[in-house]
Length: 280
Ligand SMILES: NC(=O)c1ccc[n+]([C@@H]2O[C@H](COP(=O)([O-])OP(=O)(O)OC[C@H]3O[C@@H](n4cnc5c(N)ncnc54)[C@H](OP(=O)(O)O)[C@@H]3O)[C@@H](O)[C@H]2O)c1
Image (cartoon, rainbow, N blue to C red; front, top):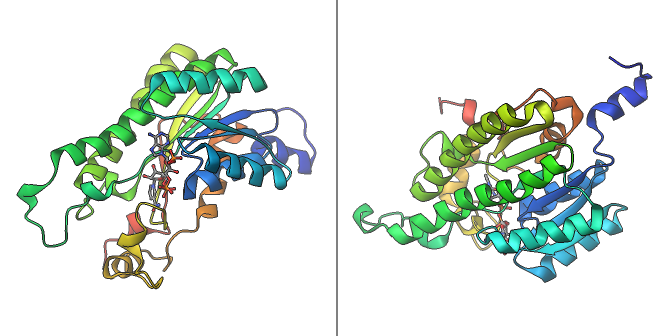
């Protein structure tokens, strides 16, 4: 271990100073919070989404807090658009070290109605959700992973969900997609590790239940009180509440920074104890 004073040892473990990061879905509820956390830990952060105006708003918010940020328009299902985004970030900062794949989520059409006949489930909506979460994570990892290697190494963090490991009712497509994201996380960790050693690491976080744009109506009534499903979730979350986006910050900064230098291929649940609880 190199010599450190007490203060700068902690700083050396968790600082993202000098790193350039890109957060896909940085325009969303969790992506926005994760982009801000990376910036507050010292990284320069590119906020990527299809909605340019929202990406610009998030970048401006980060800058207003003293961080360095860039808004980048991009679609994770369109390789050319990701290549253009990569070019933009490389032109601006000359490097990419961190990729957070936060673009994703469920689609209303892929949520099976509470009393619906399961045999009428839409296969095309199912496919769409798998495409966004799985292929979107893959394409961004290929495009930005290559830049990470060219930049001397770094870290990719994917976003899974509680639905990956145990069945959540009504969201079979989303569960299948996130289970595949966890599998892809392990495959990329192994394949990239074998080729590039410890210079690139790939991990995932699995958030519990947070109120986002796409799941709001499943979790909350229009008056803001929890739905029946929302209440069941809170009852099965030992912490007794939904997550707050900032709850993801610590684990994310840890995974992206030097203190996680020997951590690759894992999925970290950030769920207030949901996945540990049997329900009894
Ligand atoms: N909220 C939760 O409880 C929860 C729990 C576990 C996991 N997650 C996961 O966490 C991630 C973020 O979720 P969230 O709750 O923050 O959802 P959100 O608020 O809906 O944000 C998702 C973001 O993804 C972006 N996006 C969608 N399609 C895209 C595409 N083709 N290309 C680029 N960006 C695209 C959207 O931005 P644009 O419209 O600007 O493109 C949107 O801002 C998702 O992967 C979700 O599955 C959420």
